[in-house]
Length: 156
Image 1 (cartoon, rainbow, N blue to C red):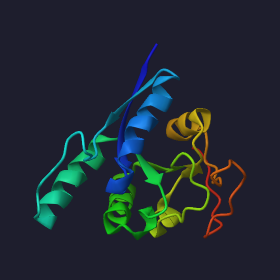
Image 2 (image 1 turned 120 degrees about the vertical axis):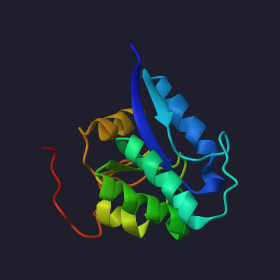
Image 3 (image 1 turned 45 degrees about the vertical axis):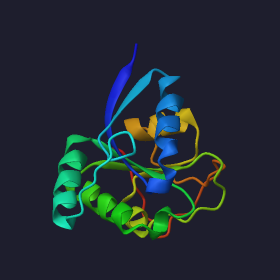
């Protein structure tokens, strides 16, 4: 039985190929991801910043969870930090996911503040994080990572 999840996948455009890989990873576990973010499969040519923010805001609100794909340059992207901040304002669960094969990526500043879980490329951990069963912060290899702010988070 397939489980559908509405998510917003925040990512750097050069990491776009990993969206399909994430969908495939979770599909093998019976999960169907309905992604509301803008990616190469549904590009947006808009240039007006306020229009883009309005579009993204509604897509973030539609999703109950935001998954942030973390690659080598994600932390440098202003849009990714903005999407994380908006996700926090909306009350979305915010999951950080290291891109498969990454070993030393820097986590975006907004994620350090608002992230709920940070996991490596492991379908079980990703599913547990999306479902709210995992609030761990991990390194890409799955070992425990000390958060920047040392805040205890729990599941209510």
